[in-house]
Image 1 (cartoon, rainbow, N blue to C red):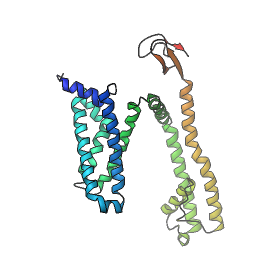
Image 2 (spheres, one colour):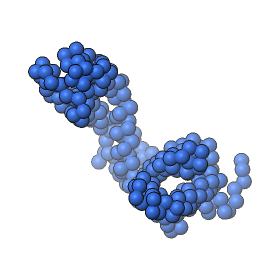
Image 3 (tube, helix red, strand yellow):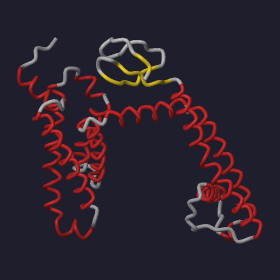
Image 4 (cartoon, rainbow, N blue to C red):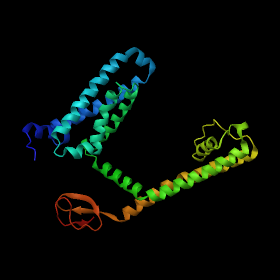
Length: 271
């Protein structure tokens, strides 16, 4: 096992921890730097601002990129499990935060991808100790994962519907009314079924308008189905969970079958 220096231990507590004043200060400064970098990307996309302040924005962008590069290198160096950090979610996001600017040296315009740095703002949940929100987000992801088969079946059913509707509209309206091909007609069906309604293509015949009206009404019902699927799964998961109170370390949420606190091992009593 690699021998760690006191400097590594101190830096690890600062860059990965929030239990020290230096660690919290580092995280707050990091959040402000992330916000600054996102603002730079947004401003650079405005033509008037880019023409007038382009060089200043570029200098600021490279300054932020170098700071993020140094931060990433330090995180890798002080990490106790480097492989886990590098291949983990935050490790990949930290790496991607710096790459777009370097990539822009070879592929112009890719610096706009630096907006991915905004994902790093999710650290605010850890910094402010908003673990409840993080836990609720994990419940939602679990519900989505558990519902994946039903959502996939639903998606294929919708795909079949828009294919049929698009083909019918192509036959009814034809190229004269903008339905120049079946794929373009399917595009119209998707836009109509999802109630987006760009209006770039519209039926002109009475039958086509009647069919479009039916698709719009059907769209409202279809949109509610994925929500119902996920909501039902969340409700099912909640029925198999209960909040237990630990007399030693406070209330924690654990599986219903748990009889002891997963943190301190004390017996749990139903709240």
